[in-house]
Image 1 (cartoon, rainbow, N blue to C red):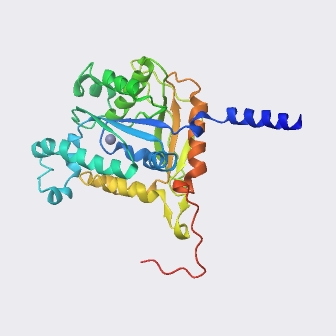
Image 2 (image 1 turned 90 degrees about the vertical axis):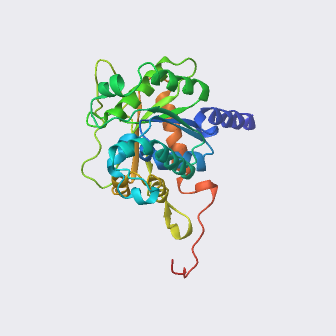
Image 3 (image 1 turned 120 degrees about the vertical axis):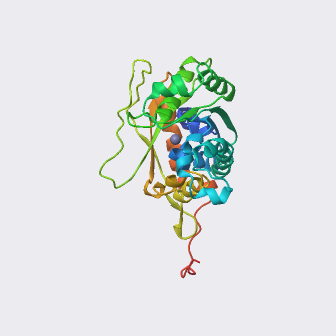
Length: 310
Ligand SMILES: [Zn+2]
């Protein structure tokens, strides 16, 4: 009898475990620009490398508007990228190559490009949706990808009022697409990077407009880029993030500030997914459980006198 009770208890524990901890997660990144994946770079790397999950990336614009930051890359590519006409013509192809390099580092399986125009910096989301992007094209394309991809999660940038209109527009488009899709809906997560010791933490007050109603669930999830592992605990996920950022060489200023962020923080953006909070919690618990042991490898014990590092 005792054995039976133990068996039933074991079975109940197994059934109660979060689904995402048992099956490798599938996620789609939906962003405006090639390089926006930096916000969740360590999270994506951990999903693909530590959990054996699949992450795809959908980029809505061609990134042509980034020519102003390309001075240092002009010699590298042999193109006068900071000349607006030249830069806008050459950057879409260059930035695709850079994104594929970054994607190889993060383990991204497939990239999808919608090649919408990246016209200019504006905080006006409606300008982007009404005049920069082709109307009636983007949301159905995102929805079609979601319906074909069987994703558990969608990664987006959290739509604060002061962020780039393209970032807000891509997040609202992802939310609309999830709400309109047939079948099982993925959980939409909004990301912001944070500094562990900074007195000013990111505000989670989102941008609202009558055309883009949006709410976020208050629970915060995070990935710590600074988790140590490997020989002498000398490695961390910050190294991966820096590799990824360095792949985007045409975006000069982007390289400068990235080491300062050590946390990737997320909230669930409400789009009607079932058990959204529970699924998100399960993902980040599974990631945290494996973070210090990438690929399931236990940390190498350091010898008594470790050789100097070169
Ligand atoms: Zn961007």
